[in-house]
Image: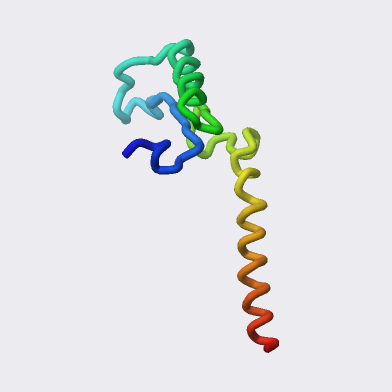
Amino acid sequence: MDLRSAGCEIVTIGQYLQPSPRHLGVKEFINPETFEELRRTSFEIGFKHAGCGPFVRSSYNAREENICGQFVEPVKQAINQVVRRRVLSQIK
């Protein structure tokens, strides 16, 4: 099963960067044009957001890219519905 058929709408593709000399070395650096091609392809196959680049991480800059904001309101609404049901069930 691929990500899109599983319902995934956001993809992040980054580059492993060696954090220190004690860590595994980088085998190959991916050029920016390849990341741009991956970003375009991601939108073409239906992703709503695609963060692609050497410094991209799944949670890095999520707020700035408004990834988090897409989920905050639906979660708030779901919580409010649960709370409302519980309160109403206690009143009856």
